Amino acid sequence: MKSHIKQYKSYVFRSVYLLVLLLFATPAVADVRQDAESAVSNLHQNDTALKYPDDMKSLDLVFEVAQRYAMVGEKETADKFYLLALQKSQIIELMLKEAQTPPVPEALPGNESVPEQPVQSAENTQSPEPVSDRLVGSQGVYTVVKSDTVRLVAAKLGVTQQHLRSMNKLDAKATLKIGQKLSYNNRKIIPHTMKDGIVINIPDRTLYYFQRGSLVTSLPVALGSPTKNEKYVWQTPVGKFKITAKMKDPTWTVPPSIQSEMEEKGKDVVTSLPPGPENPLGKYAMRTTIPGIMIHSTTKPSSIYSFSSHGCIRLAPSTMEEFFPQIKVNTRGEIIYKPVKVVVTENRRVFLEVHQDIYKMSSGLADEARRMIEKQKLSGLVDWDKFKAVVKQKNGIAEDISL
Image 1 (cartoon, rainbow, N blue to C red):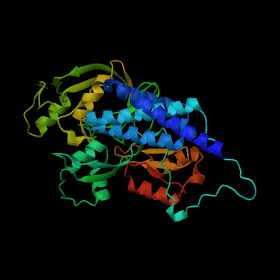
Image 2: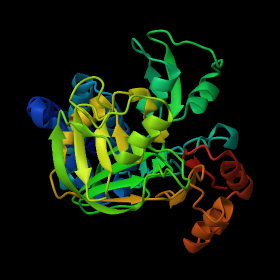
Image 3: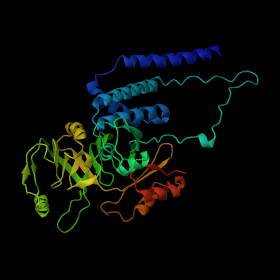
């Protein structure tokens, strides 16, 4: 018995010792995001979650917090969480190398035995956090800062205003106060992956950026309005593309169609706008091979996560500031249209995400969702009442529809 206790103490001491070593061997903050992204990606590729599910769940949560702070431009706070994620990754890597599970005490002589753990009642048992490399976002709490409105916070988080108001019981005319806490859920299913490049899914108004087959970041965007008639088509087109040029402080050459719209609305018709606060392209723009379609920042950050552009893809100014340097000319991309997404997690939970068919391109959302579930042979895991509720709500959030 004493030998078992000594072995346990040795294991705990070794774990603490490794943690101390890592804390004193922290990398330069300038590289911490890239190092953290690489470390987390490598662990997932090696199926580490199957060996250390709790540790990986904790790591993913910390990394997601870092991504969200980076997305809203709070770099200093983001770097702290990236650093913590990196340290957690390194500890898990060392655990894998050590590969020494602490010994289980042998059965004691006679009728003595190790006491059994109490069984939780069903009503107190909570569903485990979903574990899947195809799920991004989380349930979290946002702290209101100066100048925030419900519309702007929704844009930052990639959720609808209705979602924020409903989840926080906010009146339609409610104003926000600095320091106020807002609960949200922006969990989404990655609709399509690439080895290297950009995927933009129109219905979920989200841009996904991949490197070496792993997701680097997911960003809320604004896309083309549903307007489509004989005179104007403002819908963002689907299709593959390449980035052909990157421009800082771009001049906007106004397309003839938008000039025509200006004239029709009685506005002064302009053919071009120089860089500055009136330029709708903002400070950064990237031209694509799709005619007339650019990925650019905006002077209207509250328009993000909406369908309000003339077809271009808008990013929030602070987000574009960070995203722009990561993209090179000739980066590949694809704009897709998937209003329905389904994924099954490692612990066999089925998640369904349904969006409004904003461009009326689906033959039927419920039928589409059912076909996807049947194709993945998941029908036996699904609570069909939950399925119907998610299809009816179309709230654009990945919801657990498992039995």
